Image 1: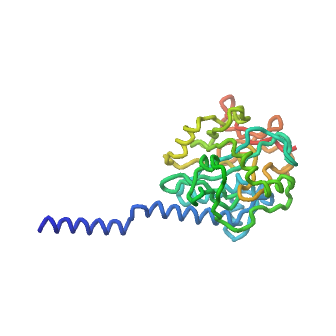
Image 2 (image 1 turned 120 degrees about the vertical axis):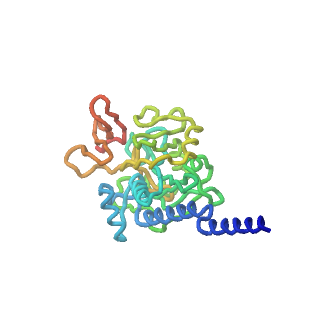
Image 3 (image 1 turned 90 degrees about the vertical axis):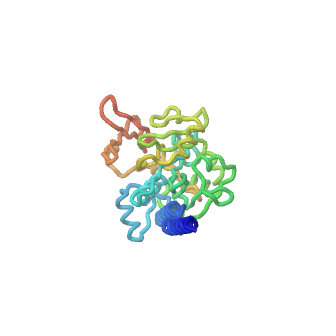
Length: 312
């Protein structure tokens, strides 16, 4: 009888513990919180040029006031990362990049088509979001996917997370490319999903996998790894706060994945001389031989990371 009472008491304690902290409560809460944060960001941001050169802080003030900003995919990805970071939710910058630089329609020659997305740690796995396209990529059953899984899918599925305009065409210098993407979305994805890249923990470069004959092999800041190695990275929990992505996409600012918008940078930044300014991420932006680099460190030990071709 005494043993039976002890068992009943232990069972009651177990029921109380589950009610206070159910097994999946933290994971479910984090998934819902991340989804709400990113949906809010996507609902106030469209792909475009109006806020291409405003600071993240200014963009965030506009969003907080209920306004709307138009930026490139790399910038909206960074805005999402910053919002999640303030909530204590780990996230990281991931990219999809073509293998070769090709002039296409009204895109200047030498621009590498690319797209920036965000992977979020939701308590149990990394989950992909495309804030630039107002969507979360999914499998055919509506379940979450990683960047690698998305790239391997023969047909792409999405869950809408925001309903505002995906693309604001005002001032777009590449309307032909934007129009092609609007009507050839899967074909565009075939081009930019040739290489999959994930920002490394230090935030100074990218591990990538894709075709052996890829221009990324010769680009500073990109390290080729096997698909198995990248899979191991994508399934590994964050050991520490994930480095904040840089302000722009790694090669050239890209287009949204749900509809379409031009990928290359605007024709010219309104500045009197080449960009050379310091950021709080401990690098200096420099222009050399008509190319833009982020320079980490000083002197001979400095690390030069290629960003994009400089606008003419």
